[in-house]
Image 1 (cartoon, helix red, strand yellow):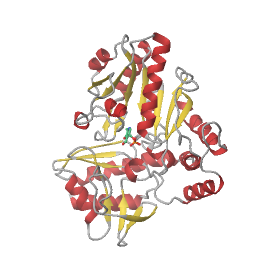
Image 2: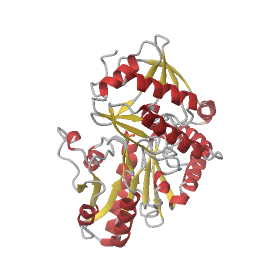
Image 3: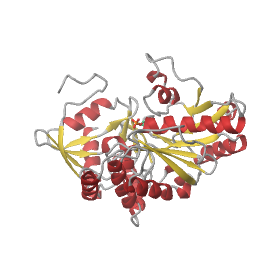
Image 4: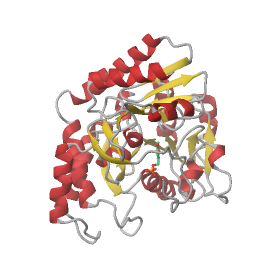
Length: 389
Ligand code: PLP
């Protein structure tokens, strides 16, 4: 392991050199079954041939234009992305590079929307306890986890947290005199695969609409097919005002985006926002492959089917150390009666095939396999997990 990196990550002692589909190979030639997708990023698996080709072809043509101009690939990507999100009511997009950048932009959008429509003093953004929205000072401020808030103050002011699922608390927090937006994950990823109920989300949408507060879905982890619909909000029958995306958006090349529906699509004007690398043509070329793949007939249905299969297999294990199983599509959480990290470590360091898992909180394992995983690979990974438990 190299010691030149700042010590910010709890890294496992493995260095990868190659990937192919759901498989990774380390420097010793050992193979690993990837149930993490690089935390929901490599949604099409590793070295997906159409993705490799699109990135290489684009790199040979043009890899950056400044935002004075447009590249044909970036334009095609933006148009296809908005079209893919049209069912959720989205009209326009801003292309960025990461999840934090997408959420930061969405917060700016909500504040300007509120200022233009209602004047000063209405800038609060309500988020949920247990949420994760990013690591910049503002997106950390939006993140409802006290443990991440130590050491870095002062934070951006104007964020208020409510417990998920508590409509009374939400009703009180969404003060129409002070609130610009509500930002939430329909399924909290880092927070442990916490799924908000359809009733809660529908009631939240109603409250926001009545009070002209922007309802913003952070779909950075749960969006882009992960839960079996293109956007997670579609699976809950909700049309938010704003959606943020990143992670799987370009399947491994850095990309992020925030989209807005009718209400807020034209709020940001020239000079209000920008990003040097946002909409980068190589990321856009990769993003086009993601959009084309997810649009293939039956592709999203397969994600749902495989997700059901994961839950069925996990339930059939009836393992005494498993105390809870939740999931939607290829996003599953397994609550344990023991700590998750030692199991995660054991899964990686097995003598034969390694298994890459994720944690979410102390006692929850998180499974986010690539969409391209086969049934046989799913079964193999879950068998390994069962044996480790
Ligand atoms: N929002 C959610 C729901 C996330 O899961 C993450 C990252 O895990 C982020 C935002 C931040 O994304 P990034 O790390 O790309 O800034």
